[in-house]
Image (cartoon, rainbow, N blue to C red; front, side):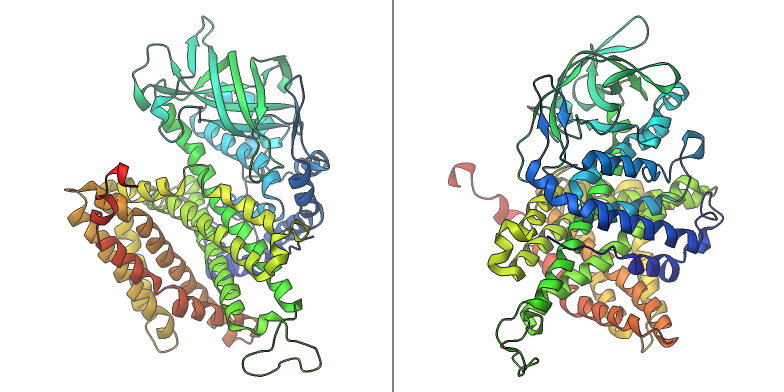
Length: 593
């Protein structure tokens, strides 16, 4: 069975030494998140992930979820008890407002916890993860009555949430959706239609399931301008926070999937189900984007999580598997062969995973901190800058970290060799589970187009210019001898990103295909610069601690150097591909393929 040890020490290094969480004690909830409290929370979460969730990952994959003739669904053995422990620990709502039963702690803690949970059991983590997205949407767009009715149970975890967008005939293009909403005299709506690929759509973990459903009110304008968002619970709310009559929504089937078998991905049929409008009429997509952005960041964390657990297992195997001798001579002469970790090509894969994981975690933590600032700061300029950051980095985190998560899972499988292809060792499950993260919540090609087509030019390029200035400032401030080997490659990579951005400005307006053809490379170029900036900050903090006698930080310095020397130069290749334009990509007629 695969192993997993939550990277608590690495997280504490980021919180205490790199981003210095105590500097934000002026924000609500941060003063309660003292270093000892944070360490205690993470330590307890680590135990739950390692001892409870990890053993269930294989169970969930093998058993899957079962739909019964009455439309009900049972989750794999052990999931219900594990979910009960999650609820009793108060983990779902630790960052939710206290007035709805949450603990009001920083969002950054919830984000970190989601990584630990997903590394241990990605399919299980989707149940509370979607609930957190529903909480965010209702907090932002719900009426006072809706908040009072739904939030306490969602925060407690006694009810769970889902997001219902996709229909059999439309996925990304939500302007084509057909699910209809008919107004009723009491102010509610009757919802009728079919939604597919609904994660956590039906299960036996909670008393109720609150579906957030995109639908079109009769007579609404065509396209996305005519979509509205509705709260449609499985059971209608009853008195005193309980549940009432069964609503007109049923699970028609469970999708047969490549991976994440422990999560019930459902076809949901709405047959005159009662729902309530959330937010403004015909502005449902704007309201749903609150949940979608939450989900996209969560999926990016899933990519990081799978990459981490895959790397840990690959390292353990590489230390034990004997194969050949080191090129520089035997390292373990008393054994019949050396462990494969002595071989440079194996090291290349392991170091790549390690370097991406540590920088990816820093990028996630940095962005989660910006989310807290955007929602909790009293300074309007701070909130705006943090919100700009979130908009710019969300597609990068989702697209780059899920691509890298799958790549790490495949690299770990390769290190296992034939054993990685055999189900017994559990590595092939990581490959299958990781693959969906590149697809759902907006396929990664869509993330790249969102970044290039919408985020770069928003507000006159305010967000991207702020990032350029921040990274450039860091490079200039740290150009002394000690940091020069690290910041010089970062400065070169930043120039590549700036050139790519300028090329789009000069060549994409007249010929939009140039933007489309280069968007994916741009997303990964951007991701490398962002990860490089994270390594710059981590190296600076690590050097300070190393100088104080903490020898453990030497591994950080070496890993950071590997990233700068071996991975960051890839920005030049991405730039070259972007500048080649769209001609060869688009020239062939469809019939020539």
